[in-house]
Length: 456
Image (cartoon, helix red, strand yellow):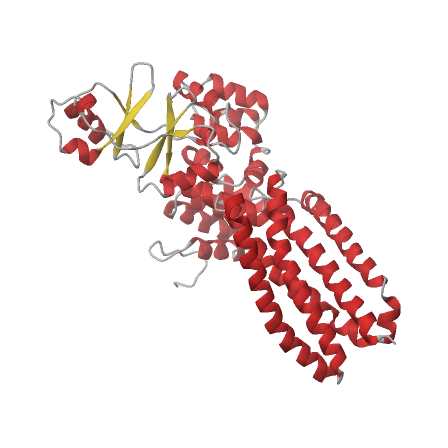
């Protein structure tokens, strides 16, 4: 019975197994399976289950999600998958769904909702939540001020230790092992830990206590820098202030990890012209339109490489072996360049690569390229000579391999750095430019040397 598709084991079941069973089940079984699944997993996992279903089945299963959990599930879903559900809901349902919505959730959902619905939701917020929502909208999508968590313990900077400890112990906020001190104007005055409070006399005022040496983050700090600061702080959260020093909220370790994951997915998807919000089951026309531009760019680069090959048509007609070996030269350069490019893009994303160490990195990568080029050129050159029984072909092949791998290493460093300085995402465009360089240089070098050496 354990193998039947309508039975789930909450102690062992993983989301991936649930996804498989849901998609293999017939409609009646799928309804029963989903009903059991949503009782076993959190809202984030429910979102993943819904995203794994084709749009028709997704809409059917959506109506099985409890109303008091629907908002959390929508917030956890990717933008496109979420939009596919929201577009089917009548305005009255949307209004009920967003009744008393909190600021953080509305920030996540607003782009997928009609403006009138958003305005209505804002008007029904509490005054505090409305202020937080308006505050978040003052910051850009890449600034930490837009994504703050407001569930934090605040105590007056002049409070006594005993009072602060009681407030902190009564708090039910997650990751609350610190209290943030603010003055009457809301200005941030420091952070004190639960452990430190527990060791102080109850009557001691916090103004007399040496607080944690903790510099708050500015709300305009980039998400990348903010998440790194939290990860390296050894704390569960860091406070965030505005330009005047007023405490706005905090960024927790949980949020930092979520943002890091989204950033990684964004860079991964960007390499093929997509983004992390893309729906696995988005409509055919929508998906085709999005990918067409990338295919067009790729076509232009391929045409350039083909044009270079066409310049050596006579050579290829006389020495057919060059046509057989050509892809090897381009492929070796492409792989070598991609390795360097990936390393450099990561360095740029993490802020590790600067003008000061760029020359050292370039020197190191050129050395790696030269060493690998020499080693593999000897191997590939020997194979080519034995294959075609011609030492000259092997020498041409070996020389072209060395040149292309070294050029690939150079391009792998220079291309992402130049793109980054021009505010172009190197993860999005770098691989396309690199492939063009390695293909063109590889073909030009190999066929050019072949013409000089092999054609009488």
